[in-house]
Amino acid sequence: MLYRFCRLLCRILCTLVYRLEARGVKNIPIEGPVVLCSNHKSVVDPVTLGTWVPRKVHYMAKEELFRVPVLGRFIRNLGAFPVKRGGVSKEAIRTAINLLSEGKVMGIFPEGTRNENVGAGKRGAVSMAIRAKAQVVPVALIGDYRPFRKMLAVYGAPIDMTPYAEQGTTESMEAATELIMSKIREMVETSKPSA
Image (tube, rainbow, N blue to C red; front, side, top):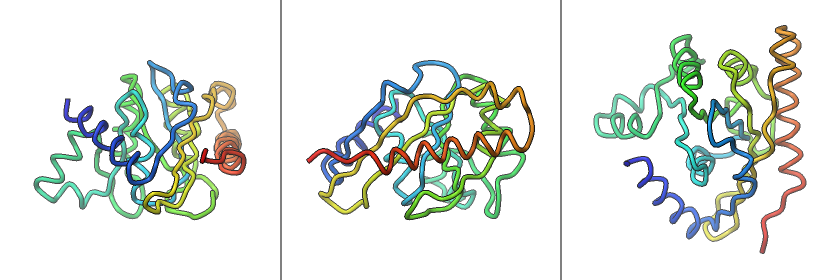
């Protein structure tokens, strides 16, 4: 209930402030495990990524945020879980895989840090998707988060990880990661917000 209310509130705010437009929402599978892999431009990205997704999106968030009494409880209720600074711990990876194995949705930024242009991705998202037999949906966030300037969230067609899982090599995971990042780059380059 809290998540739905906050998502509705975010839709209203993002539409008013950033004129957020979403395309390809129907590409998101309505059931089963899904990893939404997005480029990473701003601290606002998790909100932008999940605002139009019809399912609850779970995220990793900095451990320090959970130490703030009210905020920690609030973001945990919204589907976030802690990750230690300086890298993703085994515990955080286990939590993510468990959520996916339960048929839930994870929002992940494979670049690991914010970049103005779409950079190289890390293999973690692919590894988790393969282990949980999840589909991967590439997402492009386009725009600069200036008030009243158009923002666009584009959800691409799901990418089946099965061929890469069958190979099971580091090279195949790197190839899958590069495929995802290239799809995101392509969407960033070819998608323009409507007027």
